[in-house]
Length: 130
Image (cartoon, rainbow, N blue to C red; front, side, top):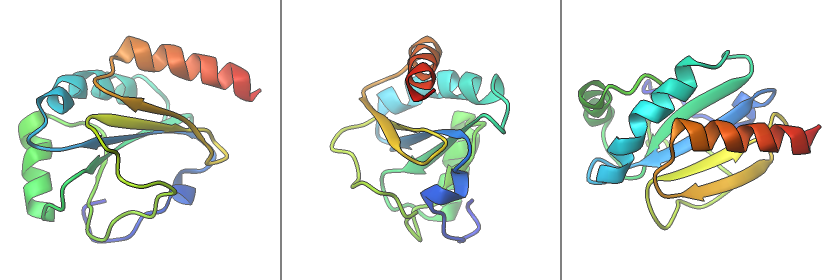
């Protein structure tokens, strides 16, 4: 993830995916990390993946330090090279994008999310996808 290899959305097809954009200057981004950690740790990897992407172009070393300092448990993708995503960077942070197992964007969430809000939305989206 922070090894310089490129990532594409199709790398995660077959499972639900939550993509979280954050920045080190964004205090609401820090606030939702425990909830994203809980979502990541409470779900089987073959069902759901949570990944973080730095909004700002930081070095891998800077990102690794933030991951350690903030206690981020889910994988964080470096922005250099920028992962190939089917959308532009969000206009506000924090921002979370939810994709279904087919790689289709199902929801774009702006603002701080909680474990409860994410699990409730995922449950609703899964029912709609059946």
